[in-house]
Amino acid sequence: MPQAFNVASQSATASEPAVRIQGVSYTYPATGIDSSAVQALDSIDLNIQPRTKLGILGPNGGGKSTLIKLILGILKPSKGSISIFNNTPTKARNRGLIGYLPQRIEADLDWPISVREVVSLARTCHRKPWAKPSVEDREAIDRSLELVDLQDLADRPIGALSGGQLQRAMIARAIAIEPKLLVLDEPMVGVDIAGQQRFGQLINTLQERLGLTVIVVSHDMRAIAAVADRIACLSRTLHFHDAPEGLNPAVLAQVFAHDVAGVFGDIHIDAHRAEDCDDPSHNPCGCDHTDENNTNNSEGNQ
Ligand code: ADP
Ligand code: MG
Image (cartoon, rainbow, N blue to C red; front, side, top):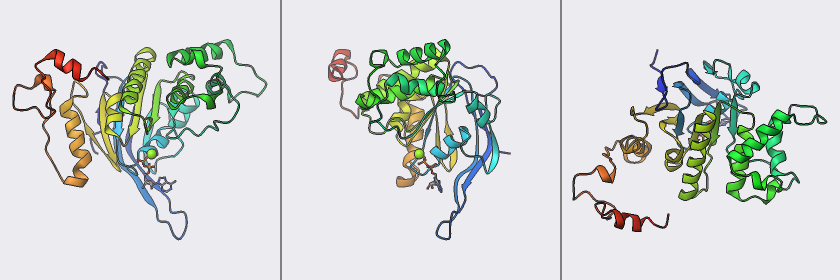
């Protein structure tokens, strides 16, 4: 049996994984005479320790959304098993252990509903329509809005938010059920670098304050690097890249080499931080890294 990738957070001690994926394959069945079966995932083994932020990088069609649907219990593995905090995915979802930010925000933004109402739906949609939110519901909703810094826009119609605000509202909805695992599917499509960094900081804050385990999938390495402290690459099968201290330039270089191998064949990249470089001729960006002020000036507009 192949060895499972063990993805641990930087501070975690060995404990029961938050997510345990064992020998999972998934094949979409053929749907008609014109379509054949598609094997989206092949023999995935992965253990994710609690409080880890795992980024899964992969090309379009690599199986990222399929893996997420399996983790959420929307699809069942053709082979293998998944457990989330010792529950089947369906049980974990029904118990509110998984918060989910879908790949596309599909809400009808013209619907006359406020930000607070969208967030409260996460807690109240299984109730009878006339049942009022409980005190605990209201507190959790307020806390979620505060955590994403939308408390001042809580009564604004959801359709009147900017793209970034809408995304934060959807994160507030995902965390309003007080999950232990937060799953983000391509959260940064069309977001610029500054927006990616802000998003990474937000997820970091949420992870620390709520003790979350986070899985983020994307085809964009920058988006993954902004959020994750561990990285795996998924293209039907899983390739894990790791270092004991988490994400660093050498790990990113390894991931990048993996990512472009389909274009250039195998390449070797050596990477380190500019401040750790003792070779004066090694200065690809042309900045004077020995001069603190100069560096600050050149980056002052970020
Ligand atoms: P990603 O999210 O990485 O872009 P997906 O998980 O959406 O990848 O897709 C993985 C593979 O499964 C692709 O080849 C895709 O065409 C196929 N696939 C996805 N959804 C379906 C479906 N509902 N029916 C058949 N094939 C599908
Ligand atoms: Mg996808």
